[in-house]
Image (cartoon, rainbow, N blue to C red; front, side, top):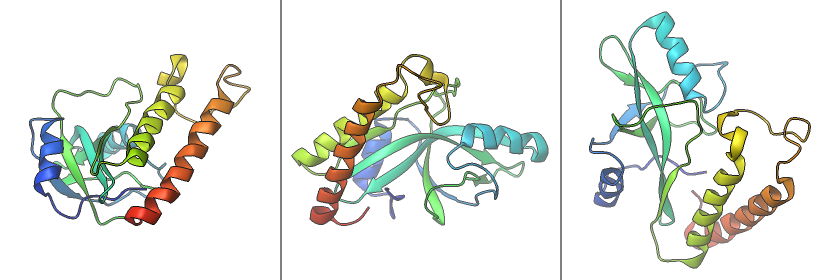
Length: 185
């Protein structure tokens, strides 16, 4: 939904400094074909095993201009020559991402919720962010914290499917309302 910020403006830097003591920088996006979307913590170690280099853990910074900014837990590839490249396919195609290194953060096999901050005082934005947090809690409760994949009644009979659908539906309605007011992400 969101996009990488076009520029590293003061509010972007301020947001990043609340998360990590490092500075954000733009990284070229060169997604590997045939790899799953957003599965960086599988793709990067596999790529390093074949091509060398290192994994750099941190956050991708996304922005819905005038609505909110968010950080998504992510890792990128540092080539043996010291270049940084994002190899992970995304839902939308971009030339580059804004990456914020975070040396204090490690991937432990658990899903990590995004960090979000509103960019305007607006009740609908606040509600959208609240619902995004609720969705993350629902999708990561108990054994789901370690699970990556489709959630089905056969695998998780106690999953609150109705509550999840309600949250998703309300988020979709708010997204349309916010798009009408603030423009597309």
